[in-house]
Length: 250
Picture (cartoon, rainbow, N blue to C red):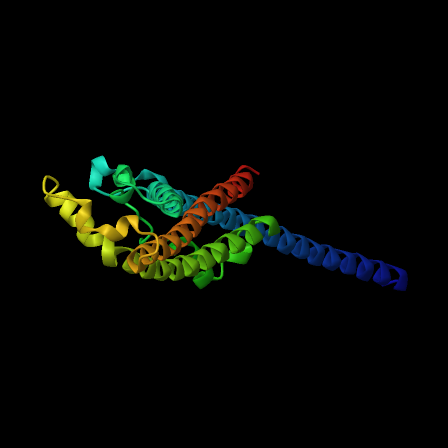
């Protein structure tokens, strides 16, 4: 066999082998791309499930904050909204500095407390994300940051809420030490009720009167702060829902 023919045959064989290797490499690359495509599609699908869970959680938080802050009515359950309790405290406190009169009975016997409920915010979807390590694969950096900030804010507001409830209860004790008997008698024996039995109500210098004012101040401050927190949580929830919906629609 001529050397030139042998060389040509070996060259053809090498090219054929190289072609086979190239085809195998291309096949592997295509398989990897297909696998990545399927994985990304599955991840995107699972992310949507998690994001919808978070939206549902945010809606529950909004619903609870709205009910506590604005929704309770005396007609339905004997309680008032926190917004109404703050308004009642504010009116009675302002009038107390002017001096109370018998015509102020509406203020004296109004419900003054509605801030004793814990926030009890929902966070199970977020806990699931943390426990499964899925938070950082959920979507854009904007989305991840928004979710982290929301739940940090909720955790902070929950701590403030518990502190304010304790402060409110201290104020409530001061207020009710002397006002309880008065309101009880007025409610259950209104025909025989007389302010003559409670001269301190009209005596700004009396210790009972001062205790009432101190109690009102503490209750008003604590309840007003809790009301502001509830309003902010509603706003935080709405803002995060906007970011999540943007991610879902992209």
